[in-house]
Each structure stands twice: as structure tokens, then as C-alpha cells.
Image (tube, rainbow, N blue to C red; front, side):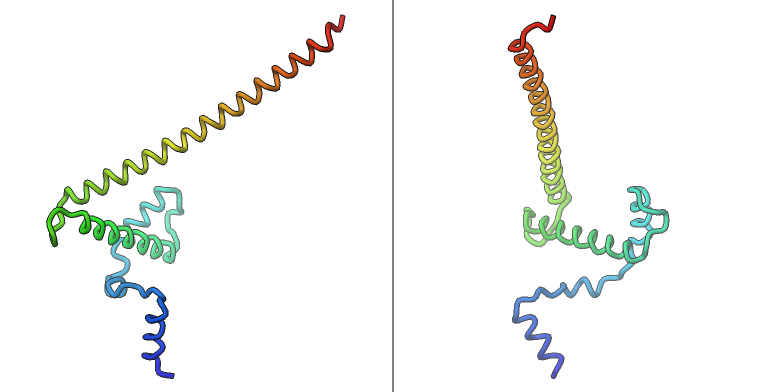
Length: 136
């Protein structure tokens, strides 16, 4: 079977292909920086090369996605400005704040429900004591 036919049939079947730029870019550009960051966030001082490569792929994908979004939101066609990136960062920061606030609200509701449950049990125990009467 011809390999070029198999490759074109995969593309027709809707199987996503990696962008050509990802295979052309140099790997290991951020290797030392990522190793230090991984160590700073709790990994060992010398993480596995596969882990660093995976992190690099994730970071590069994020940066590429951020650049594409900045281009889409950009004020001038074909030109990126610092303001385009700042807008995205503020938007991301706001999303992070909202997620954090949501988590705080969940914890407060949980604490309130726990306190309410304790009060209910104490009230029921007090009512049971009143029904039984004095033990003297």
C-alpha cells in the first residue's frame, strides 16, 4: 500500500494533524528554565527529560494559542501590540479570580451546612431532653 495514500485518507477522515510549525521548531529551547520551574513547584531537582519535553510542549501550545487569540482580538490586522496581550492577561486574571471566588463560596456553604447540621442535632437533643423530663 502506498504510504502517501494512507496519509491523505487520514486527513480526509477528520483525524487532526499536528501543525507543521510544531515539527519545525527547535526542541529543548526552554529546557533549563522549565527544569528550574518544575523544581520550584515541587518536582525533583533533575526531572525526567520526558517530563520536561511534555511541559515544553504544553507551554509552547499555550503560547501559540495565546498569540492566535491576541491576533483575533487585535486592533490592527496583521500587527500585535502589547495591549492585545495585556487584554488577554486581564481576561485570564478575571477568570482566575472568579474561579477562586467560586471555590471560596463552596467552602463557605459547606462550613455553613456543617454548622447548621450541628445546631440541628443540638436542638433535637435539647428537645429530647425536655420531653424526657428531669432525671432527678
